[in-house]
Image (cartoon, rainbow, N blue to C red; front, side, top):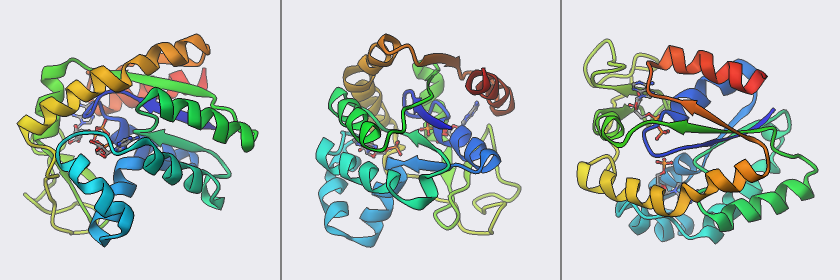
Length: 214
Ligand code: ADP
Ligand code: AMP
């Protein structure tokens, strides 16, 4: 199964991708996670990406296209993958078409997550993540059992630097300008399914599975 999860920041792409990838034994490819790891490790790519990420702007296409090309060629993606947060521009979508053609591995479905802007701001302001194991929480909607501590591995939870309201508003504007046009791109290819992602996590997950298994 090869899927793309499209949608604004905070729509729940990562939450749902983590769960579906684990259940189906496929690979979650989050360009945001890969870039954050590169920033933390201080690699050349991380240094190039950091300023864009801090400002809520997109990292240059050539950087993220290179990441995805390498990742999709890796053995862990052979059984299938979920692209979470990629593509985000028409240039990235066109490059992905070329990569998948090289691999003879077409996309089965593009799931477009939809949520209004104000709930998105609340979701992002309250997001907490575990840098050790990648688990995701929300201070109100998915709180950890013990404040600030990961239920899964006991690690200390952190708030992402770009999950501050001013940066969140910029990221939503970037989504509207650069990424939303991809809905038409994939609708034109006949692979787009819209998914209302405003409901609680379990209801969204049930609807997601119905959409990808249809
Ligand atoms: P994205 O990957 O699309 O940016 P995330 O999956 O990281 O979004 O979710 C953003 C925040 O919203 C997280 O704190 C997560 O726990 C919370 N969240 C995800 N899905 C839902 C939902 N359906 N209802 C309420 N909160 C949610
Ligand atoms: P995310 O974790 O998906 O919310 O992404 C966090 C940040 O990483 C974004 O605000 C961008 O700066 C950068 N990023 C992630 N994926 C991409 C992409 N496909 N294209 C450009 N920048 C990206």
